[in-house]
Figure: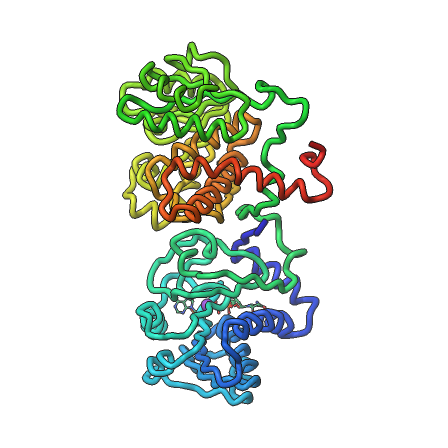
Length: 490
Ligand SMILES: NC(=O)C1=CN([C@@H]2O[C@H](COP(=O)(O)OP(=O)(O)OC[C@H]3O[C@@H](n4cnc5c(N)ncnc54)[C@H](OP(=O)(O)O)[C@@H]3O)[C@@H](O)[C@H]2O)[C@@H](O)CC1
Ligand SMILES: [K+]
């Protein structure tokens, strides 16, 4: 699991750790990690052309120290100082002593064009708002591809907002980011995450001084641990029965895909509620599904998945499913029938357009501030909100957030959301909390998208669905291979 911390938490941890270390030791740890990554990216350090962009703070200090170390190993290092009077004194002295040259802003474009590697040390966690003045011009040059070299952001891309993942103005677009101590929201939440490139974490010893993180990124082992354990003694009821209220004459495929997602998610049984004509299609594809015309009569379930491809005119059914006092997943058309606030466990799965409609804001506004709006909706409806799209964010009303790391553009295809809804509903029925169900479903769904894309390039929702059982088997295997976990008892 990767934990993400706020600037305030990082500063407090740095202060506590620095009090126990000699002056400058922490920066040297950061620089050592930074230099290792840079050296690995270069085709030999000796003779490589490195350009350091250094702002006035410690971020610029990191970059100058790294430039100095690379220069000592034979690199041609140039530095552009954004604020020469306030440049990091020790870093600058080390850079010059190592043979590094200062380049004025007028010559910066030429140096960037010839660079093999550009170190972006303009701003780190002390940055607020987009880049201004000369810094903005340099970032624009990089963004326009005016260097052939790899752009390596120090700690984070200069100009992005560390704590929100927003890009309020001009910013650096990096190929790699070398980040120190812990994760930052800007490295995992879009739009900023996209401009981080490949993220390399450098441990500088902050761990013991950091609080438990509110925002996390799960990995395979976390997901394997969270997946419901079918267990030897389980029967179809103990594995959970999920009700699926989805699909319509216009969108029968949504019902087929949601029921498929639910069956693959480990539910012992799926009860489908919908019109006969759709139920026939569902049962042709999934003979094991039970079908009935409405939530009231289809039989007992442990959780409901409501809304995918439902169309209009099913408001009574939506009310019945949402009012049953069971855990619910609400997707797509179901989102138009939300209660004032949820009293029980609820997971909402809007995309940006749907969330924009719910909150009465523009879609672009949601895209620009994904974390903010997901959190706002979670608080407003007292529900976990899984905001789909680039870097899916799962926000709980208690403030916890999980950001999904497995997303892929391969999932941008009609019907993949229906599969996700069925899968997450199935996990709810299996006993997972909405936060766990949403984040585990997003993770497995993303992996299924990647696996399907590896097979067919542009996978359909049916391809993603077909990849799910293999993905879930592999994930369970992650724990099976370990020593101590209940799943290994199977
Ligand atoms: N603490 C430690 O031991 C360690 C810290 N480490 C490193 O330190 C970094 C944090 O350093 P930091 O706190 O000095 O802040 P930093 O990000 O360099 O920027 C501050 C400067 O930027 C300026 N500025 C602000 N916004 C701006 C804008 N939009 N456009 C233009 N300028 C803007 C602001 O000027 P001001 O607005 O105040 O006049 C100020 O001069 C951290 O990310 C990591 O890399 C590591 O070495 C590990 C050990
Ligand atoms: K930076």
